[in-house]
Image: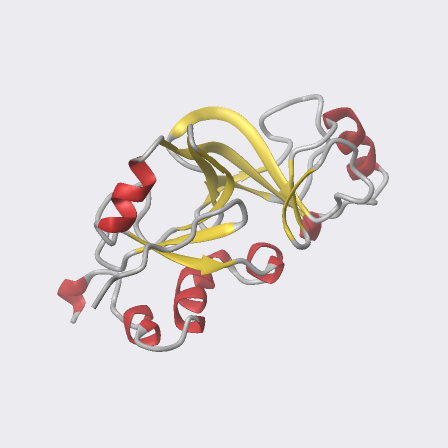
Length: 187
């Protein structure tokens, strides 16, 4: 049987294999925001910090929004994904209903005016990144399982439930993988 390599593109979600032990990515869901011949970049969107947005900069209004651990690369940088691409200039479309970045000054205005609410945006410290060919190697090692993104996973599903729900929604043998306990010694 010939095994097909999964198609990875901007907007793809990578679900960590249930057996991945890397603490940066264990049971993580990573939305790929850039994928080209130079490498790939994305954000872990199911691992929140305790901190709230606004706690990291005085120039930004405080929001009752969590900041997520976007990944282990440059974890002193702030990034954001949102659903407001139609009103936030310079937004980069990632997948239907999800945009990356945008004009930060306008974002501040839209947040202050209530046009962007905590349910419309997710903030990330750092990002996940792969050099050219690195992600393909990890996929061949079966470290990741490619999945399709739906904005509900980012904006509506509890971060604690994202990995399991996305894994189970793939059908086939994936619901069984989703049911594997996080700590197999519990079994």
